[in-house]
Length: 223
Image 1 (tube, helix red, strand yellow):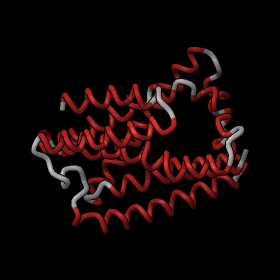
Image 2 (cartoon, rainbow, N blue to C red):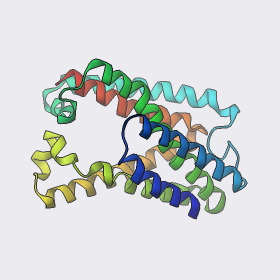
Image 3 (cartoon, rainbow, N blue to C red):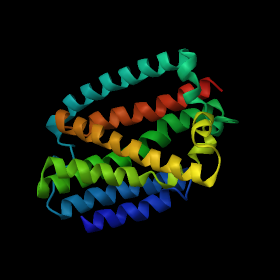
């Protein structure tokens, strides 16, 4: 557990500092290292939610969740009251090719894979073996929320909808980061429950990818 948390702390700093291919390679290396730590601790692929017998069920869950997110985002993009939630200044100047790379490579390999293996796979599996499902969910979700402190530092200024709520002051930035941590921690609970109910890591992976990737697509389309 201590080694896993230490790896995650170092990975968080590196993944939020490096970009491009270096970041992607780092994410894959961290994923492999975490799975190695689980195996060294006596864990199995089943503890990580990756047992062969659960993959088909997890894939079905993932496909359904992806379809629901896609439909929900489409409706939200068409409704004026919620359309502004997708506005993001980080999309300015992005090309279609850059969007494709982000959706098909960066999000699945550089974000979803490493985060799901880390929090709903290895960390969840280790704590669940030692303390049970409730503790696994709590620890995993809290650390998942803290994982998002660094990427949330400029969130309030990047998204106009949030700027209107938190403002562009230092205090507003702190409030936006706190809100992001609480929101992602709550999301972590949902991901953990999907992992528990489906028995597979593929279910939260599918939902995680859809939330991020479809968000990019809709935000890009509404620039």
